[in-house]
Length: 305
Image 1 (cartoon, rainbow, N blue to C red):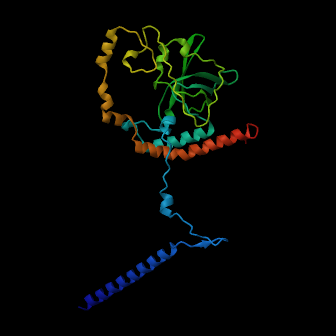
Image 2 (tube, one colour):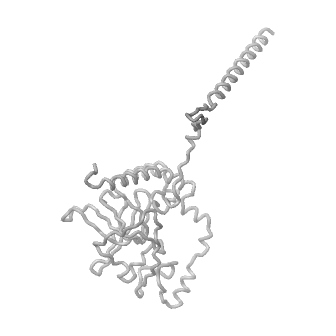
Image 3 (spheres, rainbow, N blue to C red):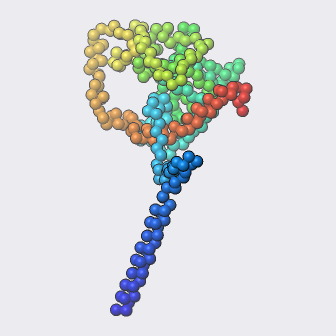
């Protein structure tokens, strides 16, 4: 009986002390969160608004939606068997570090570009090539793009790794897009569609202007071709003028149901939520790099440190 009485009094004492501390903490929080009124010289009262720690921590950085078209190489390979979160994070850090050293401008398939690379066999140790971007792909540090030009009546194509340390400069001479995502059919087109002067000057473009879409449709040479272009849904090619049997075969091997296959589309793309997280992660650093470049341009080459 004595033991029960001692335990009961001990529990009551603990309960009383807990309620006292809880009441004191409530009064302290109500006092500290009360706004302090201040008055200016005119006698007007103002209440300063302060953001709590939770609100400042929960600030969400939203990247522009066009980032997935401007920087597709930041998105990882959607193949689940090759994904590694840690490797993807480290690659994005390396890509941002490389972009702080060399400017990689915005470009698309169909843009006219000039790339300067370090070449030990060249007399001036540099080699510059001008051409149209006919395809780009890859993800992370393995991103690449292909430039094509016709030099001395011979088609020349060079594949560049976007983050290769040998690249010294990347210029966009004409920023535009085409009707198709891949322009590999230029290999079977007439030469004038892939011919650009090596001393081409960059075209001036207004800031924040919409990237134009070139509606040009190229004319292909007669068969044989490198690929069966009639079996691809090409928008930037004129009528192929083939016999009907070629179109019948193309209709037999076509797979029109794939555009309704949601699981196939899911396996080939990165979820939108993950894309937003990735682009929000790199958004602030890309903005800082752009501001630094603008400051350097205003100072001029002589004032650069």
